[in-house]
Length: 195
Image (tube, rainbow, N blue to C red; front, side, top):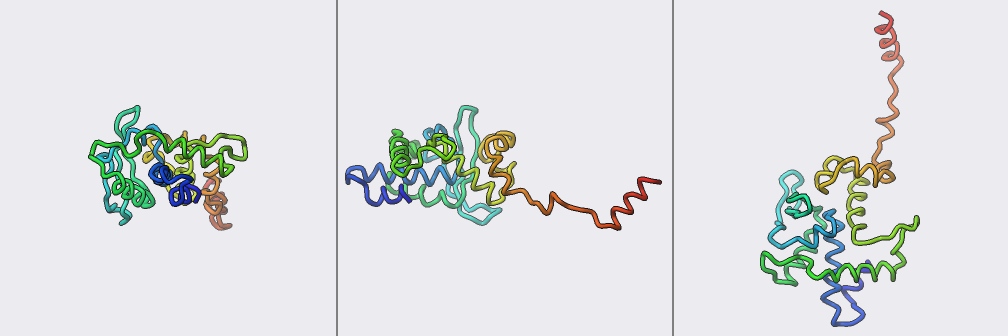
């Protein structure tokens, strides 16, 4: 909400473009799970608007160029509008970067400070990388498969379990964990063990 407000009513009119870029950066990152360094290398030709055949949703398919080569990412539908606004606003060539210059990081940090969100309740600093954490946590809380999230984020299940364990607890199904056999099944199991 704060980035939207800033994009609509920048403190100075000459900052409007930068504020709009930053708002779309936040939405794009929160709906793709990209690392900030991956997003900084992203070119328009790396992003395709597609209708996903499995979900029927219009999403982005992204070729992610990172330190380990090329990987792939499918966005949530929430990344579509920010991407289309970026494309309309910037009228780019295919090889132009989506987020050139890095000013969105400075503005993002400024807004975090203004909103009292620079640190979480445990004293951990929030940064642009926190948008990746937000993406992963929301996907987990909405019940997405952890293996699919790991593949989409180009990481391991172990890393997700290590850093997001507190959010995984909401995806655990107590009814599946606390299954009890019926009396008849328990007795049948006992008889077969005794034979």
